[in-house]
Amino acid sequence: MYNRENLILEQYPFEVKQTSKGRGAWICDTDQGLKILKEYRGSEGRADFLCGLLEFLKERGQERIDCLVRTREGKTIAQDVDGTAYMVRDWYEGRECDTKSRDDILKAIRHLADIHNILRIFPEEIPGYLQISRDTLLEENERHTRELKKVRNFISSRKKKNDFEMEFLKSFDMFFREALEVTSLQKQELEKEAGTGESIYGICHGDYNQHNVVFTRQGIAVLNFEKATYDIQVSDLGNFMRKILEKHNWNMGLGMDMLSAYHKIRALSRQEMRQLYIRLAYPEKFWKIANHYFNTSKAWVCGRNLEKLDKFISQNEARESFLHLIGDLP
Image: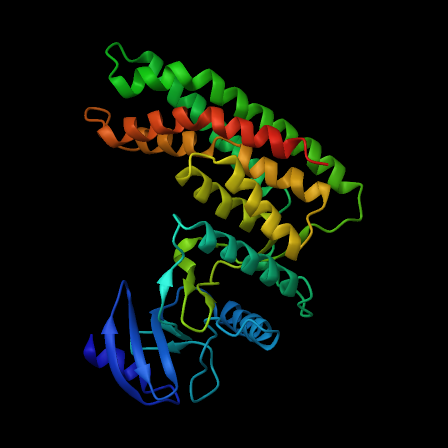
């Protein structure tokens, strides 16, 4: 790999002092600061768009963004001898957002709101491959709901049931009902959306989580925009909040502090609050646990599956209390 790595780096206008291998990437110490070299599977057009988007963010105050580095020929991707594409981006030393730290969490939320504000004024036309269909999430949730029913039917047909299967059947009706209620609400919201001029769409990070928010000595760096999409922006907020709240037993105080931190930077409309509710209310964790069970050996069910299911069930009262609270916000 040494020769391949160096052949790629020679295409860039910087001098490499040292490289170290990470998870599927190479961190490069260069005369122009830290860079990361990583294989890239998208199109050149998408890379070009991403390059412009990240430069736009940086020009408007987001100084620590993993901007793309162009080759000596001005290209956003480089290829090795067998045609494999690679991308070089700016990189930053620091620590990931600590999901146990309320201060880290709220700073990450405020940073997301600021990024969303900037992305809403991005002047370039959004390419079709970035745009998410308005009913994509509904179709995904409806598919997950059908899959839940399929798992229920499979388990019900088994004569001898293990502890996980019995626990799943006990809790199935409650979460299946939640899934049906959320998809029904989604349909109503899509109908309302068609008759309103309010835009709740914008460019999203696409994978905003604690791993992609890095605290450096100079400030927060936000990384890995490769999954950027044009969608309802609160999808970023919902994904981040759900992961954090699952780790904090759906703590109502923390949840409201997260909402308040975002709202102070970028005010959420009532329509956006309903969309956030939808993203938090669908029992996705229950589906994930069921899906993992169904796609692994049924002869030996990992105790971790039962542990995750028990934890999700035990958190549900706190989860429903928080959902009830945000569902009633004006």
